[in-house]
Length: 292
Image 1: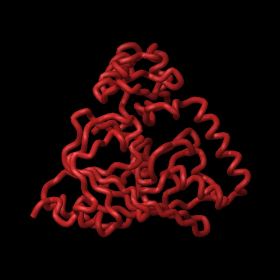
Image 2 (image 1 turned 60 degrees about the vertical axis):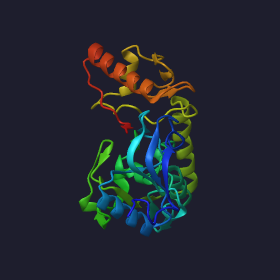
Image 3 (image 1 turned 45 degrees about the vertical axis):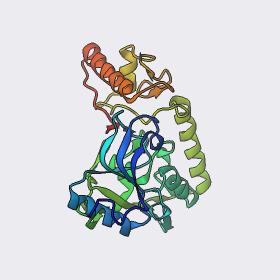
Image 4 (image 1 turned 90 degrees about the horizontal axis):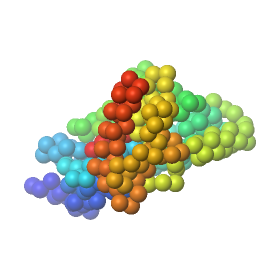
């Protein structure tokens, strides 16, 4: 039996991944799947486990750089409506992993539920945000998470209660193959005040980040007590280029790519920034972006 037998409607071969990421760079996936519901996803995960096929989940593509040679194995994207539902009940909002983080924040604010609005402007999906504990100076998503449903690499669906969850800076204990949904217990507040606060966060973020460029989220994690962007700036690296990739003049922890850029350009620029910051300031930067 072929890997694709029975999955022909949802699996494509040699799918270009550049169109699925914010950087718009990188080669193809050997196999690319968009399951229509949880049952199809579970069956596909089990088939890949049986066949020894590596499987990866692609969320909004805002925190991923795909290498020019592409990705072996199966890449799964939860783009169908079955993976995008958001429901509010009292102080709790339940969001499926494929829902956009921005949509979750908008629903929370509309319902008069506070806590997530400092995350406005952070791209990507709820699943990706939970996996990497997305956050800003105003807090992170983990502090509001009270429950998660996950799927393991063998296709088993499991529940994770608050006591089972650990969140730290840009990481979480939610490292199973798929985060299916998360529940968030928030604080009640006036929707109008929340809207104003969300708009202020958005204005500040828009003014300080290259949101309209061919780019991604922050490239490096902030070292303890320091700003990666400030360190890169202090090392004199704003505007540095390798091929078609450049350190943003607006925020030094962002790399922007022009139409001629390759993933290799971005990778070489990342290496240049790391080595210069280490050499000039004695700080080792750790990447926040995932490199496939």
